[in-house]
Length: 300
Image (cartoon, rainbow, N blue to C red):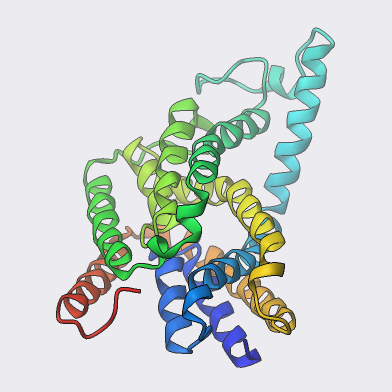
């Protein structure tokens, strides 16, 4: 991997990881366009390892952007549970006016910590069970990618149509964690988009667009961290010698661009629907299907 290829991949990853248009789809196309790996026998494994490691840059972007929220959640989680072990409620839990249905013994931030844990379980289980398939050629197949680009676009369109969009962060409950966490499983199929799937899940259970996106980003932290760290270990064996400096550049670039993408999307969704992303997904997905059907491009 050259440094130019690294910069291109970093930009693509940073732009598409958090905007609901599928980072995997765009990274697979980008890696083909720049002829990232020439060895066909190892291309799928090497591309998977590269994508997972570059995702650590976007993980850093989330951690920095939501640093205040993360610190508040962790400190409240520890504080409230230590108080419960002592047979009392924390001051924050007592002082908050609980109208959300969450346990009255927990503050909002501590409860959000539990929702992130609950929401991370589905993707963790499915990811481990189908690890070989995720790393194989199936997840690089353009038929799969294009189909999921269209399918998730249609579901996102339906979610926009039926979602009430009246619930904010303070009203999130187990139903939200299960809906958004379950939707995150779709992100294991390329072309789905982690943010697209999870925002869709949030809209279906009545969250506002900004709340759905914010919860989606917080829920992405354990998934991206686990995926990136697991692949980082295997990347040492799968990636060509000498590619690590360029990989580091790609990761840094993806973090910088990813931070800007988070900032943009949260502000955009305050006043706009996801319509522009739905339209983009439909156009790109259908275009790929047409090219595949006409044998203009190969599926793998």
